[in-house]
Image 1 (spheres, rainbow, N blue to C red):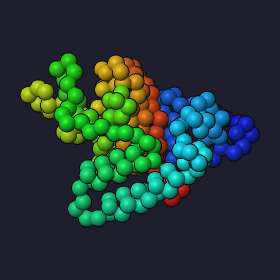
Image 2: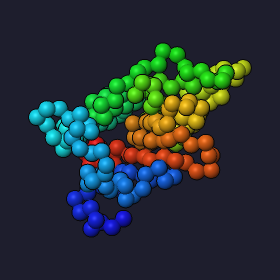
Image 3: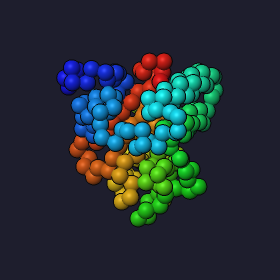
Image 4: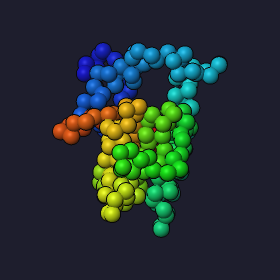
Length: 210
């Protein structure tokens, strides 16, 4: 990417990882510089009396406050890592990204297999999978809670594994999120197992957490 092309773009490459080609560096820089298509105020339904930059600033302040709360909560002894991470993630998506999250009352069942996706957005078309912040391999650690218990044994899954399986088997779901508080990964429908098609953000490496 030529930095001279987007001189006003402020992009923290240590906090954002490009994995598998879902987003190109050039496209991300255009988004950061607000030069990508569909980035006008009207495209985001900006409130009357506000500009898009002002909305982003408000969301950033909320994200920083939520991060500070999450960071303090995860330092407490004997805390529930699942609950702390879920509270932070759902509030972050709701307050800062305008996600209207739907909580699942039971696991999604497709072709005899169960997919315990806890939340979704956009009328169920964007699955959201959450795992605890203290897992050894962020988003790639297998958990019983995210597994398939349709058979005699629980087939454990990681947050990313569950998300990718749901995207691949649910036609109306083209992309989704998996989050553990310290890492947010965006994935799209991708039947290939040879290469991940994802993008990732590490909140803790952004200025002020967020």
